[in-house]
Length: 194
Image (tube, one colour):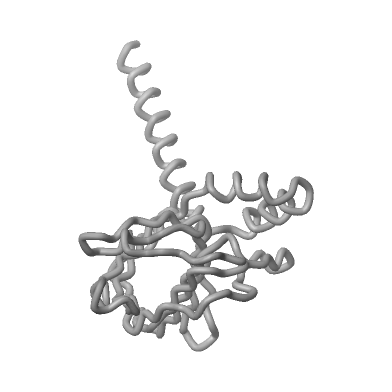
C-alpha cells in the first residue's frame, strides 16, 4: 500500500516537473547570452572601450506588449513605469571596475527572412558606470539594438536617451526616437544559449 502511494507521488512530482520544464521552455526562459565591446567615448578619463555581457533570460511576448500598452493608455505614465520596472528579462553587465549591471525590462528578437536577427533591449534610464553623467533627458528609457547575422555575430548601438512605442497589432516594441547620439558596439556575438 505504501509503495503504491509512493509511486503515485513520484508520478505526480514527475508530471509537475515535466510541466514546469515545458512551461519554462515555451515561455522563452531558456534565453541567450551575447558578448560585445562598447565604445565609451570617454577616453582618456574612462577606458575607450569596455566589454559587455548580455544575459537574456526571457523574451517579451505579444501579450506583455499589449498589457504595457493598456496600462499606459488607461492608467498613465506612473502606473506604466511601475509595471515596466517590475519586469525583468535579463541583465547587461559592463565588465570593468566601474561598470554597473543594468536590468533588461523588455527584450524582443525579430528574425528576418535571410536568417539575420534584430534584437531590441529596453532599460530604465539610469547611469551604467560610476563615470556616467546622464544629462537632462527628454525620455524615460535606454535602448540597445543588436543586428546579428546567421552565425550570431554583428554590431549594435546603445541609446542612453530613447523613446519607445508599441505595435500592439504585431506585439512589438520599437524605438521611436532618441535624444543623444548612440554609443557604438562594433562587435557583438552570441556566446551560448542559457
